[in-house]
Image 1: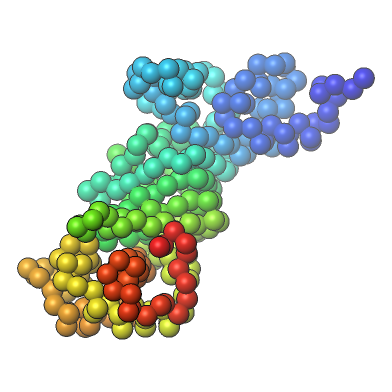
Image 2: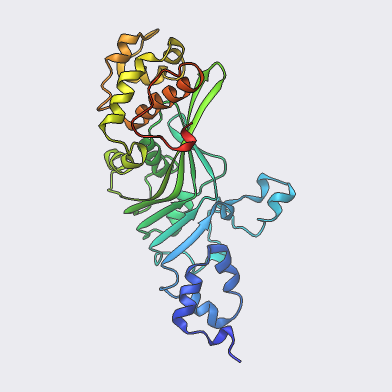
Length: 307
């Protein structure tokens, strides 16, 4: 009777390649042959990690965290014995599964609900060319830019010059969560899903590359939709100009104590960043549903979560 030991070498390579880093640590202990296959260059060109790999035991003492007690410590400066041979210069592709990990900006930098550990990964995979972020939730506030946020994510977590040589950043099933605060009855939230996007990076991490790549996901609408925002934005009452849209108006018109309807009419909506267009459109949909049903319907429907 055939057993798993009788599987061809190539098939074992395909199976082990799909295993995440914690699973590979366990697989290596099964037998010498599996360890030989696992540590081969064909298997280890791609690694997959998740945020649980970087969970520090000392952070939480609850029973929930005990499940991850076998995880290795991201803050360890020395070599982690259980990772010897699994990480190194042979790794070319890194897949980081966020599993809903929320990442949000804080004073221009990136703040995390849990340590993301990009410096740790970059130091131990110095020749990796592709970083794939999967299942992350990027939370933005007010006039935050998605492109600026992603660039900060790749730069601001590093204390010194980033040691990585990533040529491509891939986003897979990642969500951008936007929030507009300051309304009398709460805040406005909406999400933009990026199902699959690859951004080619340069040495300077040029911001325009992020902007151009994200544009089809942020605003996949023709000029008629922009014209709808331009014609109806002046219908928003002063309360919107004072609170949820104040930061956006200040960015385009400069610092003032207040902004008038004429200021809103004078904005260049055609060349406005897509995040700002989304803010005006979201406010219009919100105001139409609650206060002013006479606002015309947009030419193209927004996603369901936009309501």
